[in-house]
Length: 208
Ligand code: SF4
Image 1: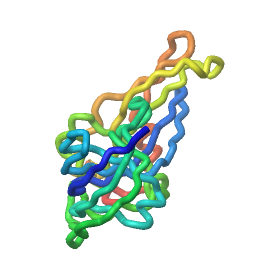
Image 2: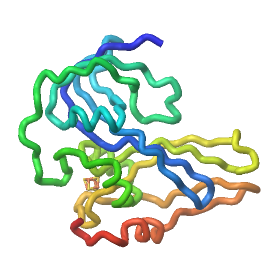
Image 3: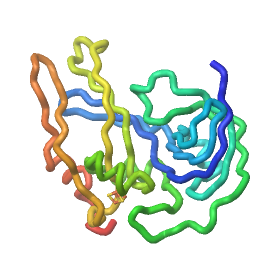
Image 4: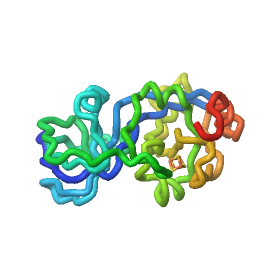
C-alpha cells in the first residue's frame, strides 16, 4: 500500500495502547504513541492522528509544539487503531518544541515511557470529558478495544473504543463516565465497577 505524505505541528502526544477484553479479564498491548497533528496530508486531512512505535519515540522524543513531516500508511483496520496513519518513515523535525509546559491539567510535557503508563494503571474516563478537556493531555488515552465474547469461539469478536486516564487521581477535570459492560458467553454481561479502577491505581496517592 502506498504511503501518504504529512506535515504539521504536534498538538497531542498520548500512549498508543490496545485493550483486549474477555469478560472480566483484560490485557494491554503497548504499541507506542499517538501523535495528533495539525497540518496537512497529501490526501487532504488538516488534523489527523499518526501512530508511531516505541523506538521512534525514544529516538526523536516527539512532543507538543514540534513541527514535523514524514510519510505514513493509512490504517487498514480502523477497528484496531485509533490513529489515522501508521508505519511512519522519513520523519524530519523542522522545528523543535519550545520548553515543555509543565503546569497542568491538561499536562503537555514529554510523555513518559510506556512502562510508566503500565505501572501507573488507569481509570475509565468519560468520552465527553476526554474530548473536551483531555485530548491534549499526556495522561489521556483513547484505546481500541477488542472483545472476545467466547474463548471457545475466538473468531467471534466485538470492537469499540474506550477512553482512560493515567493521570493524577486529584485532577480537577476527571470524570469517570458510566461503567463499562463486556459481553460474554450465553448472553452474560460483566460490569466493570468502580473497584476495578480503585484497585488498578491504589498504589498512587491522589496527586501522583
Ligand atoms: S482527567 Fe486525566 S487525562 Fe484528563 S486532564 Fe486530568 S490527568 Fe489529564
